[in-house]
View 1 (cartoon, helix red, strand yellow):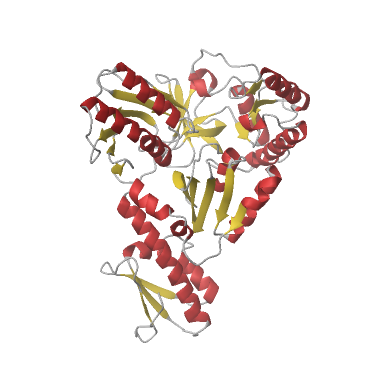
View 2 (tube, rainbow, N blue to C red):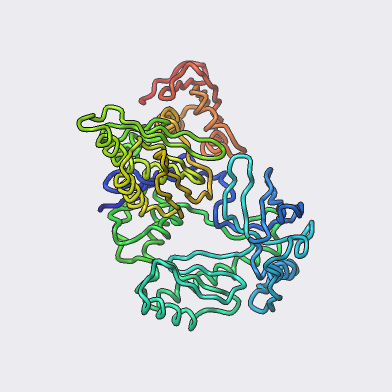
Length: 508
């Protein structure tokens, strides 16, 4: 099965598509404005203690406070508080010489160990969703390619997916020999059969990252990010890269070089699969991703074999309704039902992964009477979701032919209507053309003053922010581009006027 990662990096944001057999199975997008990603470590201040919840609310300098439950403190919470207190006094790393405190009471209460105003380090385990702020923990960890480094721990754990007893024993013994003081280690699935040299290098990189970044605490203010992932593309590669990948294609030269260095570091033999896309045609259109986005993110999604599913959302759960549509009704009602249900399974599993739908999912399959068919459908759903990286639980069908699924919810669901997908695609193309046009007019035609009239969508894109693209043009060309919006213009069209208000003919 061929696997490809296609990365489109324009307009200050990256869009990442994971393709399996040319089908989009995962889609990620990031912008410069994203905060509180899973895994990021921040310096926070306890704002409020809630005894009834046995939890505290942590001020991270944002509108919504983070939620920290007592069970997420970790046994060495007092050692962490001590670290922050001592590290505030000096720019030197105090962690290696820090003496650990006693473990906190497992069944204690939040007010016994926390006080309002305490400064603590917290790590995001769940991104802000809807009206809720991020959920955090004080059990800090750093994930590498093969290992996860856990601060203030002495334990060594091996991924359950590594089932070979001899291999598990080998890995435990290796880690025991190289593990530094005050750190625990979790061995990831990728570490299976890897030599000690690669494991040791990964471990040393993580320790070095911790030792370098932890000193930022001394000068950090409330809500300051101490450790975080700056690039979602390399984060995905860390978790996904394996022998099955055929291509990693990037349309941004700088990001291409960064990814190539990353792959060379961990998988030198796979370096050649990293390719730079330099064609003027949009990369997502060439690889068919735009069309898939337009068809896959609506409320109604077609099933290839003729049926369709309807996906609806509430605060409590997500509901998916399976319908037969134009599916051939040959045979009995039971035969038609099992055919449509089985046909829809792959589409549902793909949608859950693609949209990153988490929480409680209820699927209303077409009614079936035979127990054997219900068991068959249950097995098919488990198989379809076997490649899903998010933790999930699938329950057998109820007597009403309802299936319940819980899927780990750590970030907001990705929502994009067909219209939004199309708008974003067209807007990206038009913005790129405008950039080229302005460069040509200033550098080749020596225009002095330019007025640009665009769709409101593009007006916002060019003007929002202190360092807007309008301002960046001024810095680059030393000439100001006046921008106006016209709602009557299509997203594909724009007008350029010269200093006399006369229209300048441009090639679009």
